[in-house]
Length: 63
Length: 471
View 1 (spheres, rainbow over the protein chains, first blue to last red):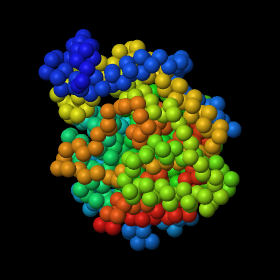
View 2 (cartoon, rainbow over the protein chains, first blue to last red; view 1 turned 180 degrees about the horizontal axis):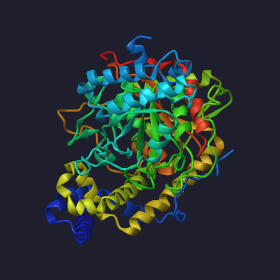
View 3 (cartoon, rainbow over the protein chains, first blue to last red; view 1 turned 135 degrees about the vertical axis):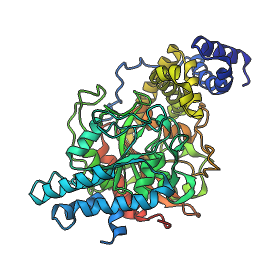
């Protein structure tokens, strides 16, 4: 884990979700990997479409 | 047919003989059950074998066919289900200790449709616990072993289904895919694995992994058989709101239509430097086969697929953790350690993260829809490697951490993420005899073209006719 600030934020999230510290220690690396990726993406601020509430595949390419 | 020939025959070969009463469903089911009794102690493909129920159902099928009531090509065919499909009166464990004694009162829609088509349920297959992992190394029900090499994994999570079909322990099996859980075990075990379009097959009565990613699909010994099973299970279901209302075509009708002039996209740059030599060679040869069959193959680029692993991992983590919220609180010690850790890690995903991943998903899907205006299907390696060692019972193959990159993990998670149909077919072997798989993927709800391309390849090469030498 190279980003102590990220680790700290993820630890707080896990603690707020009710996970005890000994369990947080076991999962912090995996959890931080996920959060780091999605936060990095947010920082890029790509022009993303709205999510679909009932998700269906895009059918635009249908013949 | 000898017992071995019966055990490795396809639905397409068996069904005409059953219909003409040249073969009895009782004889066929007895052959398969005898084989399971002999070989499953080696493979551990099954959690539950429903031998008494299967023999009763075979007797009933025989009587129906004798009296002129032939239900169709699945009538009398022995089929297994991954042990996350509910089966009335037969325990459904999800590969977990938590549900080890759970006996449902009703069938999943897939179970019911297979029974109505006359298929005979022979048992429930092993899986990675709650379908949340990639090895089928299961702490509660043991490790499923690869029929091509018992020291190798089957991959997962539908590992028991893939091993059963590869070893002749049933003619077909139903699996499920949230990331790549039908196609990767199919590739590792040398069988066909079809993930239909999201919404094509009902998930009602299927224990969930991640609701917006879960797909139901068959593992079979041939492309024709995948088409036959899909025809039986597809279609709208009011009890699964994600199912599409569009009509279900006869998926077998156009298999032999040929692929001359068809445009095939090859996103091969996603695999640069990451392929086993055997996989790389098999894909090169597959491209030559497609060209010889008259298709036009060209390399394509999918820049947004670089983000597929992130979107898939964040959505999957959030949804699986939500699905397990109560058991995680009440029975945490009953989970295996790897699955418990993955579920707990999902607690770190915020609502904002989840929605950002869903927006990303749609963005990726839009690009794929545009690409599929320029080509008819994509082909790519199902996995960059062949089956890895079990390594003394320790999980030998994990999903790598998601990264923004052109890499196999992102592309392999892509098709379940955007919901488009994809099939894995055998396309060769490594020097040490382990199967290699080729994925053909297409447009939403255009399984017919995907199956036609896969069928043409299968007929031209015959890789799927190979059997594990030790079995």
